[in-house]
Amino acid sequence: MFFEDWRGYLIAGFSLVWIANIYMSLFGFLRQNLKAEKIEAKIKNIEYNDLKN
Image (cartoon, rainbow, N blue to C red; front, side):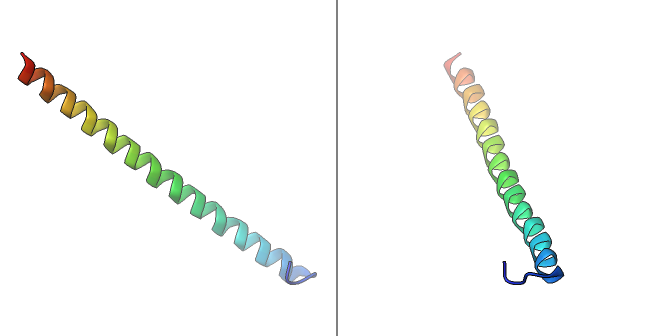
């Protein structure tokens, strides 16, 4: 770390939270995109089945 006293622990604590927030944001964004793609695929499948019949 940069500092060997209490300031190092403080910086490490904030950086840990910051990195965790980045990972959670990326996970949420990825999950949202996958959900949207799944819904689009389901809609296209329904439209295809309607046209087929």
